[in-house]
Image (cartoon, rainbow, N blue to C red; front, side, top):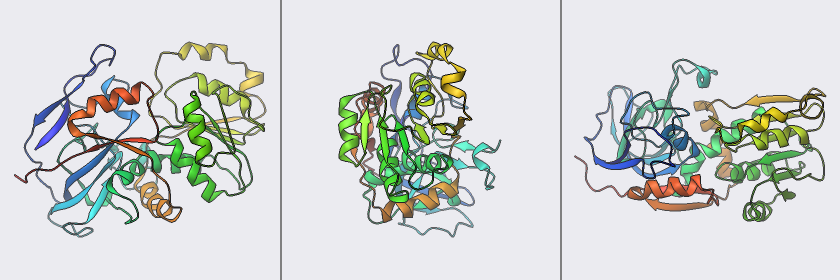
Length: 341
């Protein structure tokens, strides 16, 4: 089967094409697993974290990709949850201990980091960690829901917002554009303010229903009760803490933060950024419950999913565009399956 593989980690400043096209054996399905014939796979910022070593793969080479949509091609022994031909999706969580805290369990294994993921024609996954895709979404639209959407749903839940309280979103890419719509559905009386670095992102936020948008450090019309940060940088953290109202909560939705502007945190002032019982909460992965609960809600909204598609062989281009901030919605690889070996 065709797959894009990562053979070594390193800065994409030095390695512009970190992934290479390879022919790999089709994976064998194990007991309790399913084999998925992949149709699309979303491109997530976490892939950049893997490639550049901030959350490195447990072994190399590895097939990245954890926003996977495809059809069930084969059932392992004892697998009964899905049928051949069912359309299913796989997220960042490939497997864990099945508890409510499985996202922080030592048993957590990440799709495309700890096991081969969806930048390939086929992949396997335990049947409990594959989810039916609502009919209202195309394959490409469904892909970012498996991570950007589901982890955004978890972040929104961790924000502890009451209907009518102000929500802030810092960063407006693959996850932010979904969380905005979700928040408008779940908390219809809550104003949503978007802080984004580019005017293009700010306009996009207003198109999708934001009540206000401005720069990362701009002053919003009112102090948010909660702010969700989906950026890879540190400057938005400091700006968000200053914006929060007393007793507010900042939810940082990122696997890792990059080092480029870490020094900005040296200017933190207790009285401006932390006092008045402000809180910081981080999102650590997702659980299977997050994805199971989120997908039907996404269909009921229904979420408008903005995507830009690339061929599987253009994965490096998609990653470079993501890294450069060329974002409107989410980036998705289209995998044209040729044969079943």
